[in-house]
Structures are given as structure tokens and as C-alpha cells.
Length: 578
Image (cartoon, rainbow, N blue to C red; front, side, top):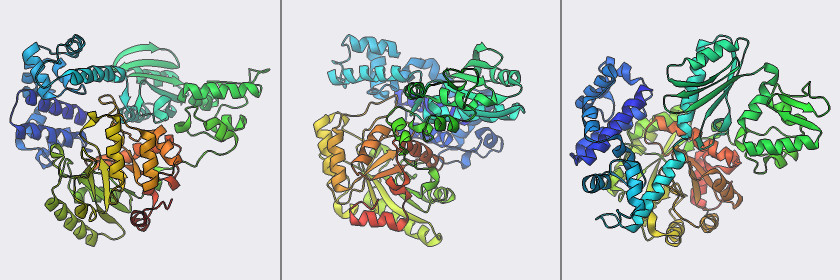
């Protein structure tokens, strides 16, 4: 966890230096070092002890010394100096959609606004619209951004929830020898895109031992409740965690009940009543004999007793899964082992942190058969998009790598910007030389629904565009989806056989499940991508797969499950082969 803690500090230094109008190269150095630590799989403290920090990409001698300082003292002098100069509210302001260092600096200097509360008050009173660089629309967007941030303030992104959960499962399993089972439940087990509280179900013959270990974890800020078989704590990050120790014979019933969703459980309870049964967290019972359960040890036996196929947790949202389970029409959902490659990721040629060879090597180690490396195109300067000359150098590097490896192929991709008029950021004579083109909108979100829709539809009409990236543009907790006519876009994608991306970045997960399900129903090809900016982020395929499962998708619906020959056949034929 120290890696992420230091990464956050470095990001915040970078942001505060922008407020200070520091040297852009210095700001970029902190950002790159933060990205490296954020994605680092090794323990940064161990590297600091071995004086190996400067071997990391983007970590120079100066920043390495600051990281060492933090590892040994828990503080970084430069960070403390900047925090004295600027309040914590300044950092919070910069996280609001529509804000940023430049606007934050203007508001701080001209109106002495140094907190989200003051920002909200000023926007509501109309004090911002007349300032240079603002205007009524930006003032409106800032208020929307504050509202969005408030909505997500008590929720975590899926990857953070999973990371905390895995750490709790690991340490409790090590500490409590009596622990027979420990399973996360709730929305995390259903792989929802954001998670509120964490729930754990356990089985142990010594429940007091498990409860004590749980409530005495070092990151527990406050014990909210503690009994002989259940406890609730608040972690130092403000996350509430509940743990229950349940009997073996009730574990399945409890797991089903506490996994939810509420809507699924209500529908299941109504079905049980029609069959003369009662279901609760302790088991499944006949209405005329509620002392002895007829099922409850496993979830499978509960669903079977109700005349249903087993419903995977990802589908438990009361969106037709119970009806499908009654007629044995639930799909065999895609699994991560079905994935044979990735279409969208980035190297350090643009805004990634690892080289092409390092990224491809990690993909090979994951057991994939092919790997499409897709850096940004030329106009996205903030992400150091590739000009044509650099793109051709990358193509040569790919050719060399493909001579080096057997049974694994690297392909040239590019995430090409859809420009404001719907044309592409590279000319067609360049696009046709790229193996897979991912067309994405990165700018001009305020064009309006009609223009944004037309822009995307026009791009899909380009014969060299294969995939549309992160269609809605949302960033969970910080940016709402931009307005588009979804049906019109999906209809066009079905006609052109342009694939829609399910982006595995935890802040995106875009297309989201309901949209992906609609796309599949129209015959639109689907690809799963990591949008990885480091080798470790290639593991984001897990989240793309989870979203696909929530969308009821099978391996037969996903292009990533095809062989190299099959994806090239799809690319070249322009028709569906799924």
C-alpha cells in the first residue's frame, strides 16, 4: 500500500506545482514518477533500501531521494511546504470536472476561493461566469462536477474495493488458523463498477478469534459494532467493512442473501413464496416447517431447489436472469481464460510508462497469443501522440519483435482521435497501414448531442476504423458521459460492423454493462481492452471481462477470443464472423 500512498503524494506535488506555474518539465517528472509507482508491483520500500529506485522508469536521482525520505520519515519536505502554501481544498478543487490548475489558480488569486464549498457557493451566486477563461457554461459544468463528486464521495472504484478486499482476505487467512472460508459478498462480488461498503462472510469454529483479528487490524479507524459472530469497522480511508461468521450449514444461504442485489433477492423471495417456501440468510424452508432448512449449505442447492439454474453473481440484478434460469437459457458467460489478446494499450512512446517490448513481453507471459499496441495519435499533445515518423519507427520495432518470438504476434494499432468534424487524426494513407484503428473522442465534449453523435457515426464510416474506444467518455466520479444518441450509433456500428470497446480502466468501464448488452443484441462486434499505460495495467482485462459478464456476454460474442487469423479475417472482410 506504500506504493500508492507515495504515488498519491507525487501526483499532488505535480498538481500544486502547476498552481505555482513551475517548470513544465519538473511537473511532468513528478507525474511520470507517480505513474510508475502507481503501477509498480514491487515494494517501493524494498527498492529504496537497495538504492534501486533510479532503475525505475521516470524516477531520477532527485525524486528518488524524496521517495527515500518518505519511506524513512513518512513525510516529504517539498510536499509539506506546498501544503502550507495551499490548503487541502485547493487539491479537491482541481479534481472537480471543469476545473484544473489554471482555473484553480485564477479563483484562488482573484476570489480567494480555496475549497469546494466556497467554489460551489461562488458558482451558485454566478460569480464565475464573468471571469476571463470561464463563462456561464463552465460555471454550470463546475456545479455539475461538484454534484457528481458528491454522489461518488462514499463509493470506491471497483479496483480499489478489490485491492482492499484481497488484503483483508489474505491477512485474516494468515492470522486465523481456524478460518475455514472467507468470501467477499455484496456489490463487489457482483463486480459492480463502484462499491460502497465491503461485506465478508466467514466460517470458523472460533468466531471470537476471527472477530478479534478483524477489529484489531492496523488500518481500522473505528470499531462501529462488535459481537460474538459479527463486527463492523471503519477503515482509515473511510470505508466501512462488515464481517459475519456463519455456520457451515447456512453459508450458501448467507452468501446468496448478502451478495444481493436487493432487487434480485426480492424476486427470488417472491418465487419461493409461490412454491410454498421461505428464503432468508439462514436457509430455504417450507412455510409449514421453518425449523429445518431444505437448502442452505451452498448457493447452488438453493437455486436448484427453486427450480433454477445457478445464477452467476454478475447477473443478479433482476434484469431477466430469474426468468432465463427457469427455462435454462442463461448464457455461458465469458471467462478470462478465453481471452487471446488485447486491442488497446499504450507504451512510453506516448503516455505509457513501459516500452513496447516490455508491454508485449507481459502480454506474452499472460498467455495471450497476440497483442495490438495502440498508442495515441498525433493531435493529442497532452499524451505525446505519435507523429507519422514515430509511428513508422514503431512499426519497424514490431517487425523485429515478431522475428524474435514464436507463437506470439505483435500488431500495430493506434488510438486515433476523432476530430471535431468527424474526420480522423491521421490521413487514410496512414490509417490503412495500421493493423487495428481504435477511434476515440478526447476533446470537444461540449459540442452537443447531435454533433457528437454525427462525429462518431462519420468516423465509423471510414473504412479503416475498426473499433470505437470508450464510447460515452465517462470517468467515474469525475466526468459524466457526454450526450450521444446511443441507438443511432449502435445501429450505424451494426451496419459498418465497427466494434465497440469495453474499456477495462476502472474509472471508465465503458461501454457499461447495459449498453454493451444492447450492442450485442444489435449484432455489434465487441472487444475487451485494458487501455493499459503500464505492464501491470494489462491485468485490467479482469475488469473488462467482469463488465462483459454483467452484460450477459459469451466468448462467442467477443473478438478477443478469436485467433490471430480470425481477427485478421474479421478486419479484412468487414463482416461479422462471430
